[in-house]
Image (cartoon, rainbow, N blue to C red; front, side, top):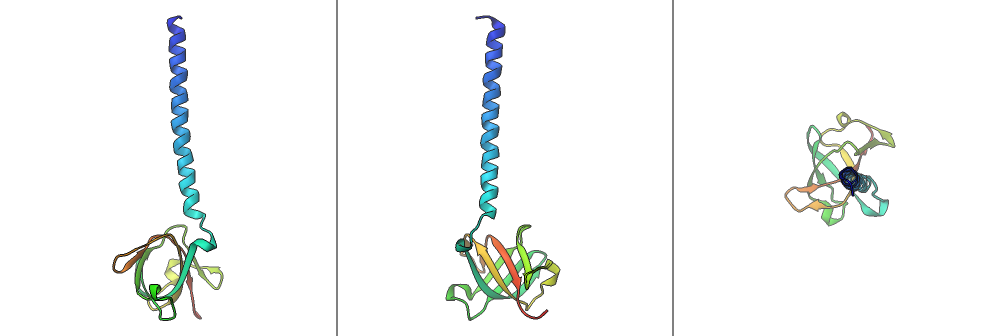
Length: 131
């Protein structure tokens, strides 16, 4: 076997290895992105709360007494780019939310057991009331 043939075979092997690694990382990224946005209605929870503090996109809320006992305490969360903000089915801005507003919070995934409890993935915040 000639030296140039060995070099070509080695080059093809390296190219295939690079393609395999790149495909793995692209597939991993697609799966992670899909997982972040593919929550079904059955995988989400919703509760009602009053906003007690707003700091940019960081919110602190207090669950109301009408909620299940697990959702009556204080919670903190960060609004992500994909978090939907609504009032009566209409999209609103973060600036439309204020301290003492009543909201419903729909989230997916886990809540960290800290004080206040941290909601990791808020899917939607819906402003309630007559604003």
